[in-house]
Image (cartoon, rainbow, N blue to C red):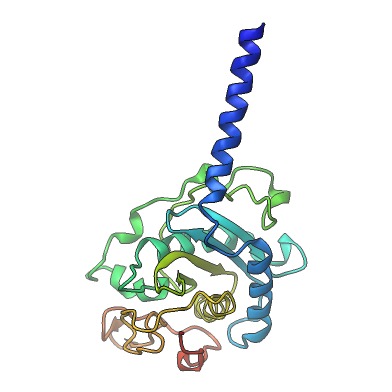
Length: 250
């Protein structure tokens, strides 16, 4: 009996340590409360898109989900499917950005189309469905969201995902937003990153052609040919505003 108790105690300790380690990897990022406040502020400030509520996810540099939040009154006030999409976007922006090169999910749209330079990328790194859909739905978007502390995976190739850069201009993870048009998702993700003070990209490379906004969304797709002039363009959405209106990075 004592041996059984010892085994059970050891297993419980290992489980607790595993959870602790997973959450400890998020220590460089803001917590759930900061994400929630930044998200609600961004939604209130943004005038483009369909004026819908949003989901947001933070991941660390290892792709571990650190926080999931929503902006509305409850979890049903946003598109339910956008919870996992926001996590995919965060994972993508983190997975394909470097200290020297920031790539937003918006930058990947044209590159992954047939004939594009990154065609097939969207099929890599699949979502871990046990992480995406596990746990109690009542906890979704709360500090106890079941995705927290786990790696979600997934690749998403339209606007809403941005890498996060600390004051040393190092990538420390990413944020993903979903719940409106993909263009509005990008605009609000930009505002969230700025409100979290993790937009320290001055001097970091990008594909936008704008040194003050290196990973900004690009609208250079020719409607006649459906081709992006620079290879990293994104389609325009309904009620789209100019990406130049976004605050410059720090």
